[in-house]
Length: 473
Image (cartoon, rainbow, N blue to C red):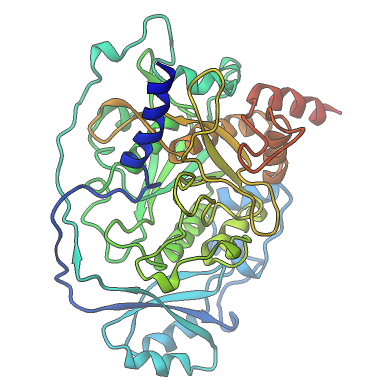
């Protein structure tokens, strides 16, 4: 039996994993929009912006400003929007502006004529231009799928309020936080992912406090509720609240669902989309971000990363991720599922500093590391992953409205993220950095962290008790 279980654990990830980049096995069709290119234009400064640090309410929500004040975090020049004067001059070059990053002071432009880019790059306020997307020859068409409005009766667990999600919550002592009323109420979580199939139709998802959604991918999908259900599964691990069937780790939190993952191609522009989504999450006042996404290999091999670049500073997306804690936001990011492949290591932005990177362990009492879980360290020697949680398998609700098991660090991350929200609800005056360090230092491998388990499995009850004592001193 043990041998059979080992074989299954080794085989299933090969069939089901890719941290949000799965595609249905459907014949591709020709890309009908014709040749097109997207460039990242990095600017030298923000001169001419009509905004100032003295009036942040003009570009940040009240909730975002209050989050920073509560943590005594100052605003800085990265918070200011991109110069509108520069944007007007860029538009005169006949390119279309499709996005921008205030944190990295960059602009995304789309064009069908690459000759105009040379003129654009000569503008005095332009620091660099980089091709980050090229139209593919063919794409996978979207397909509609049926869904269930109700869970199957046999999915209920008599006498277990958490239903099938019990083990993954209890293994990290999350139920103890729930017992004292800490279920994420008052916290706001952004879920950055690739698609959220049927969360607008399945009743269990309609009962979630979803504040809104945005699609940052260009061109936009007809609806992010038709695309992949990877985000649906991730969201379910935190937000579903169906007693005796399934309860997530933060069922009373509020959520934003944000699409940054292009399901049709794998190109560097997704790092820009991710950054735009993270900045949006900041602007509306989110406290946490769950990102079950990661990158290392792109369609164009010349743009793929090398392991020596995993220093948390080289990639565009990791630089963005590392800024979040200074804005008062905790990012929980999956480590990646490359442990059984030639890459083996974490990707980006999992290599970023000042975040929680989450690996996956199995659901047996030993909680051994899942073979597919990506390992560290970062190139500059930091321990990665930070912590681990159940992900081999995790229990989830998919886009067909069915409770099921799935493998991946993608699903270990939201188990942790939801409980981080609950812990922060209980310790509201802690800074983002303090909460993350408290979780690391109360995990079960904190005395000898390594680059497989990191600091180990969190103990959220212990983190709360120690954090409470330190707060009262």
